[in-house]
Length: 324
Image (cartoon, rainbow, N blue to C red; front, side, top):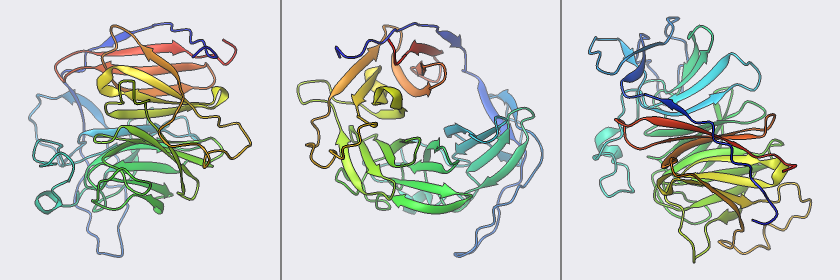
């Protein structure tokens, strides 16, 4: 850590999110067959904020939200990856690893929304009859969407609503070069050449691939240090050659030395699991860390921490400047 000084400037904002949920009144149940999936906007009614205790009936509810991503082409557009009618509960993974697809099946509703952030208007939605347990969403520099499904143990790349790349084997958990176990999040280098997957709820690693999905290496804590406990969110700080992960249950952010800007292709010669930990960021008030985001313009790393649904969420801002 001697090569990097992080100026940790805490600007925490406490937000009470106990009794909030997002609902909209779009119709559900788009019909499709095995070869054709209809991706159509079902309603132009905007999303609204309502109390979670409001038992009023709606045609369709925005379900548990797995991931959010801002458009890189339109500042007024937000992508949402949610679970619709599916709820993650104790019956979802009976043994902790394998999703009970026989009992629950595929989610019939659309799970990916494009929302106008000024008006709340739903611009587009798709993903019905496709996912089982949505989790992470990332938007790369070309506005491709990267989605993780913890039920399927897979990572997907979508371009204009079409799947163009798949990582992992459906419904087969593992920890080798071609399998994940409940992968949580994805981040892609700005030039699109490297893919990083946070893996996951039952693994303790970050897995790196090239743009075509070829395995390059994995990052994990050294054997003599506390292992990652649910790597839940991931960012790249390319100016500092760092890949940072929200180590959720350990209440910290761990940054690994990635050497993104090094022209030498030394990834295949590096031994796996011998990752160099460049920095560990923690704070007494930062307990579980659910999400992190890096702003390359302001050189700030943002984190969202919380404990339970009934507890307060906290936001943290850390200064991570290349010249520090």
